[in-house]
Length: 138
Image (cartoon, rainbow, N blue to C red; front, side, top):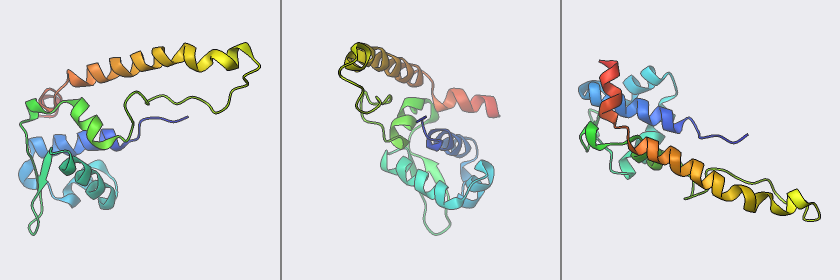
């Protein structure tokens, strides 16, 4: 089964850490909190940087948010780190039998339901900000 990768939850974890303790946010500090390899943290921070959500200070290290936490939605984070094309959260199985009435019609029957489900998820993510999450950690 294909699922949304852990990059999303790790990215939210990283941004939450930066939001509540920006002066301590070196790659090693973040990797320790996430309990994962610093290489994974650097890769995800690179995605967040490319999306304009964080900046990274070279030399001393550390990262900071480029937007206020109340201006970063979970949808922003999701879009920054997930590699899912628009409307493609759900995949269809390959080559159902066209001689079967279900096989012939399953994709057409399900496509709009799947697109609506993805839209509902994205709508929900757009309503929650990093600020709303981090208040629970302080």
